Length: 263
Image 1 (cartoon, rainbow, N blue to C red):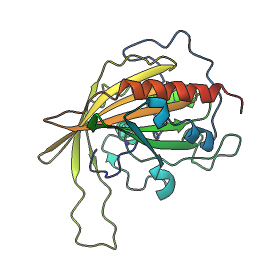
Image 2 (image 1 turned 45 degrees about the vertical axis):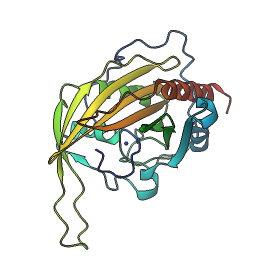
Image 3 (image 1 turned 90 degrees about the horizontal axis):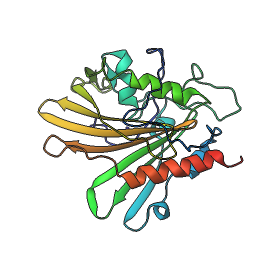
Image 4 (image 1 turned 135 degrees about the vertical axis):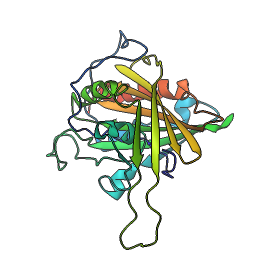
């Protein structure tokens, strides 16, 4: 969830009026035997649905984290795209939007489109120390995850190249350098839809800042009322790898099972 944000974390897509919704799937069709859309999970249920060590097998270690923006406030430290429509591409791979309220209660967010809950996690694999996967489970009101996924699909053309800037330093800390600007390049990646998911999107976001070239490879799977985001990191000489298929598959299955269970 650009790598200069020191705590890699997946986070909520920030919804504002973008383009008309389309819900196409990149690189594959929705699973033919998928379950019904599923219910909204509470924040605690979403956290319980995070994949665990024993779901993945020997050699995997999972750390579940608290979503950063839930602790620091809406948009705290959020990098701003110079093309507003491209902002969700940054927010989906880093802390950004605020989380609303639990299902069944009035939203305190400016609108009902923001997520109400998020759980972040990181997965390390002993056999591949550099191949860590960072993920996020993001809960939305019924129907909103599909809308967001469709809108993100529409950004591959308009956001093929765009810039961003980190937040300005606090006024009480004079002498700090001006925010560093980053140039991003977006490439769609062919991504089959995992079994049990409704759709999937894959992309690589290249972040060029000064002489540094960093890459983020992301897979976003829509599972009923939630989005599951998986991200890996790399550099120009060693680009980010495709997120571990086992992690993606097991997380989708566990999230779908949680939605199908009675609350």
